[in-house]
Image (cartoon, rainbow, N blue to C red; front, side, top):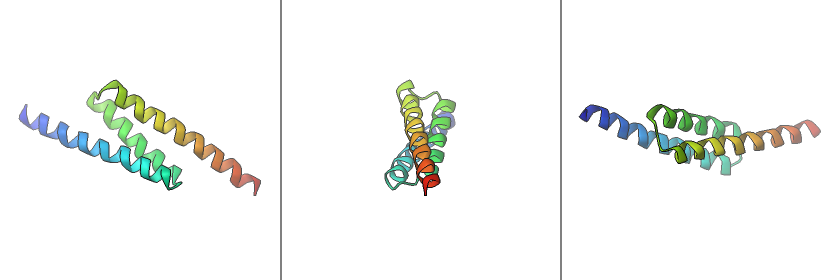
Length: 79
């Protein structure tokens, strides 16, 4: 039980790091990398049974990032 708790705690920290990395990458305009970071956070949150609001947060971040990637791709095609 103690080991499970420790592993869960470490995974929680790693999940938060992925989510914040995604935010930083998004702010820098690196949407493809941000999407990967948000997806990792989402998968870890689902796997660990995180609070639904945290899972929703990762889903919203992925959705917004996907939207920005589509805008970016459209802009590149117009050049």
